[in-house]
Image: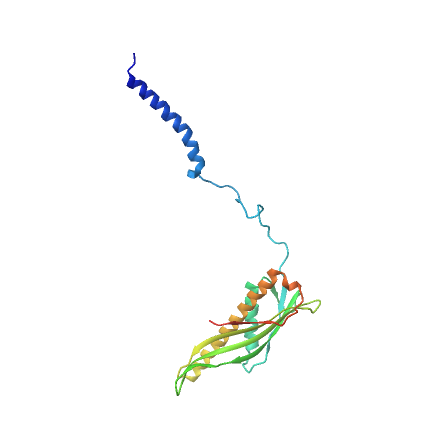
Length: 211
């Protein structure tokens, strides 16, 4: 007759083998070995498809300069073309190329108010620029978007008058870049919302940008 403890060991081995046969597949299916193949799930159950509609082509005309700052229209037009090329959702083309839309505008004003001063000296000033832009359909001449934008940038005043002018010019350039970036972003929102397909009915909104 076999000892009782030998039978108990056999039963324990059988029980352990049975337990491992059950628990190992369960652990494997509970995330201990997790791997995903393919594109994975998407919201809505279908994969997003790239839009087949080409971006609108927009020509940006040289701005009209209604201020006393010389050559401001050339610099600000270049800022617009750069920002619209990278952040408006449209393809910027030259004025001689076929275009779906045409952007035109005007630099309305440039003011340089004093921000801080002593009894005898100005310490800090700010350049404020106001600009109006309009976007029309090339074929129908229909106004589809317009916007009145403001940009500003501060600068400190030194005892060197010539260097102060350099600082003011840099501030003027910075304000123009702010306006161009803001207009490109707003145009992109209009384009993505589909509102560019509707004629403009309300007065243009006003926006401001300050560092």
